[in-house]
Image 1 (cartoon, rainbow, N blue to C red):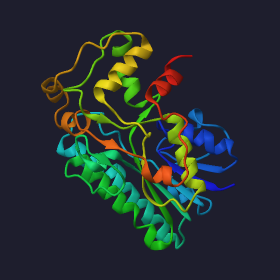
Image 2 (cartoon, helix red, strand yellow; image 1 turned 60 degrees about the horizontal axis):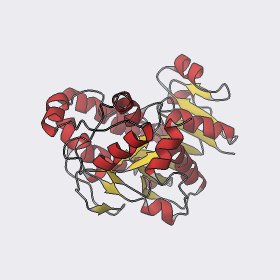
Image 3 (cartoon, rainbow, N blue to C red; image 1 turned 180 degrees about the vertical axis):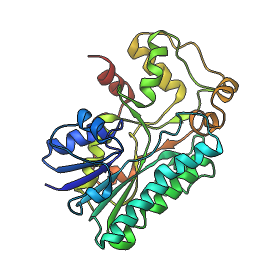
Image 4 (cartoon, rainbow, N blue to C red; image 1 turned 90 degrees about the horizontal axis):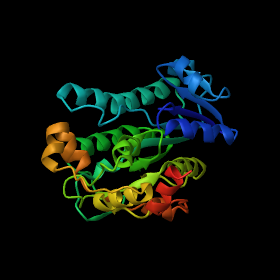
Length: 299
């Protein structure tokens, strides 16, 4: 049994993670801006706090998933600054808190994203690939650098470069499902861009795995073993739903609707492999996209 502090514990990944940690008899504390809403959302066995000063003791593990959604609105200078502060600014504050306490958690699991690599076409990417140059890539790079401060104080650090997490309670799948259910879905742009994805259950299992395996350190790509093109993603989703996928969304329309987000997130290609996870002994329950969709969508 470990004491675990989770930030971002009321989010799409955080909620099932907290449930799994509690089921594993870990002592779970969730740091949130809205404790009353969190208590309604989470199990009664979870300790909910609004400030780090409310921590009763230094946790064994910190899982830092805090951060505003990247694609919630068009990027302006103000929006980018807000996104940056919600990740790097917050992680710096987290480090400063433990620095003041004079004691650090044994294990830090920090969020990041495969956006770290930038737009790389059909190039196969593992954790050795350097960061890209667009906003998302530099954001991930700086977030990881902030988390590396913990290593300098003796914490074991694992950074999860998270791909497209598939689940029905949030994320990209929830956003596109209504159109696909109506037969109005289709590829974005050329459809040739690679999408590296992971089932929400495997995402949670991977976090539990790296918590329990402190020898797994450094960046870990949190993606399945089989990235697919956007065209294939659309075709497989439509086939599982028994709907057509005949309406592509042209790139120029995406750029009109979403601005910079279109090129950096929606049309960017990241063909990412989970080299470190596999090397550490992690086994995916849903390596195949069709199996993942069937599990999520066919009840």
